[in-house]
Length: 559
Image 1: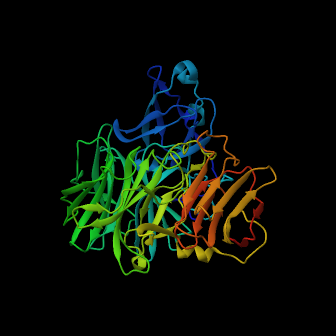
Image 2: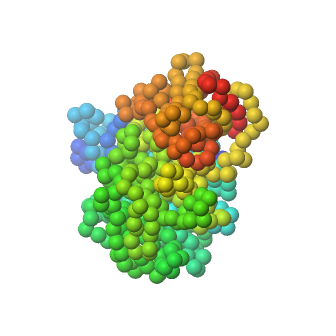
Image 3: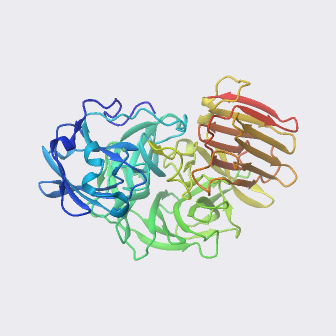
């Protein structure tokens, strides 16, 4: 991502210390008021991740114009994040700050390092500082990222919105970040899309392109004690959004009521909204995107119920080689994944515009790795394709992975369809064709980023390793029809939940594997799209050796 947000691409220049202007007014043992004379574009806030959140209310003329939570530095600065203070249009503002940490451990508030380290600057340095930042996977320029949101394609451009914390690299302050791409590989960061308001933080949702060629976003407004669905409209292809004056458009008494996925159903000529509600999916319909009618619920006695259902998607897909079409309902769940934490399950069946009917009772996973969650597809994708992206992490350790400038990446794009095996229908997952353009000339040296194509002849073991003894071992068992990946000897000191061995059914014999390597991830696919496995790895030095058994043929394509 070479083109960065706004003017935030250069080194820190001529920073002005806030504390040099005026010391904070201490209002209590955990409450302070910091006045700021606006002289630069940004106020750089120092973050210390081990500390508890502080709540900042930004005041202009004693009126609150923004509220955020941030882990302000007490005795050490891990990094800085920018607060745009110029946009408030005032020469003076105040920060009303409440600290929530225990003073017995953090000391006197007047001595906190944050007062000295708050600085103003016209620029913010976003030069990458992380050795584990992926090369060809989408990442935020800085800050925390989780679920992909509101993805759509229009006028030759793919738009990816995402759950973003602009004020730290741990989950908080949910906002829609925005990136664009023309090829699903190279992403350009865009200005912030949708920010929190009085209804709450901006949780996950979707976008559709309506009959007026407008982009309409639906998202969950997450208040302190309730979740409701809201809408925003863009008339400039997703660059800016105006929130609908009638928000919220849908409310409920349910505690978990979120993640609206909206789609046009041409069969019934109505808009359909699927919502995650507790451990069910609820279906609504509309003719105008504003008034919604409840139709039905799905979920009881189907699939995994070990956690909260989230991030739904609904689509009609072709069944390979049959001329048939069936519906697939995507249901992300946390916890409850097959190897702990979060994962993506799916259901195959029929949808008549009101009710979804599932044709199987077993639980099915779209990806059998540990780092594949919140999977959703692009609206209005070209050629009628269903292109999916996932959040490439797991809630068990997402806040602790060994990066700080940013946290989390998205998976590579995958095309979804259906295939039949032993009389049952399953979800097919194939690397999107855009990935082929990344291939360089074949090489014999194992790259840090690239694709390995492995032609197998029966059971095969594939080992990636480095000089430190760190390794990942992958095994295809042609007798059991399974594929596994063991990362227990990968760098994993940050979390006890990280070391694991994941295993997937292959639904028949595997002839070829496609393995995508990046600086912190391994994604493996059966070349026929019947198996997918996504796992993070954090080797202290890149894997430099590959070993295969049983005369498997390895073709290496550096990226």
